[in-house]
Length: 244
Picture 1 (cartoon, rainbow, N blue to C red):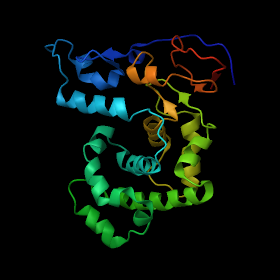
Picture 2: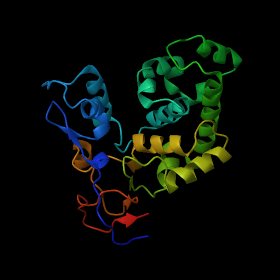
Picture 3: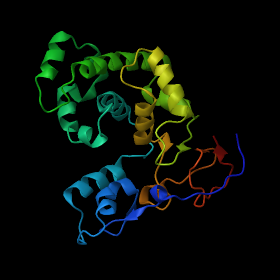
Picture 4: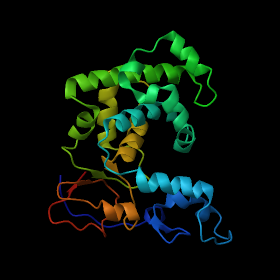
C-alpha cells in the first residue's frame, strides 16, 4: 500500500563517522559509541576494520551470486542464538568443511560427515545445527528445482525490489512469509528473525542508515518498499515508493 509518512530519525538510525572519515551504520562503530572517551585514532582497530569491511562490501548489497546466497542461508542456521560476528570469524573454516558450500555435495552428507564436522573446533560444533545444515541444503535443492535458483526464489517475493527497514527491526511481513514457506519445505533453524537477518545481508531488505556510504551507493529506487519506522528524509526517487 502507499501513503504519507512522518519522518523519524532516532539515534539508532543515525550513521557514525569513523576514524577513517567515512560514514557508516552505527553497529560498525558500536565500541566508539559505548566508549566515547576512548582516545581518537586516525586508523580503524582490527575489530572495526573487520566490521567495516563486512559492512562496506557485503551487508545489505543486493547480491545475485547463487553460491553466496546458499552459503549465507546455511550459515544463518548456525547463527541462531549467536552473534553474526561469531560466524564470520569462522567462515573460512565453514567453507573448507562444507566443500565451499557446494549444494549437491552437502545434500549427500551422511552420518560420517556429521562426525567429521563435529570433530572440527574451527566451526560451531552443535550436532543439531550440523544436521540442520544438511537438511537445509536438501531443502534448498527443492527450492532450486521449483524456482530455478535460490536467487529467483528469494527475489520473487518482492518482484525484484528491495524493502527498506529500520536497523532496529528484527522481523517483518516479508521475513514472516519466507520463514513460514521454508518451514513447510523442511528448513531447520530458519525462523523469521534468522530469515530477516539473511535478507538484510543479501540485499532484499536494506537496513543501511541514510547517509552511510552504502546507502548512498544503493538508495531507494522506483518500486521499492519502505517499512514502518524507516527515516524518510533522505528518500529521493523519480517514482512511487511503496510502504508496508
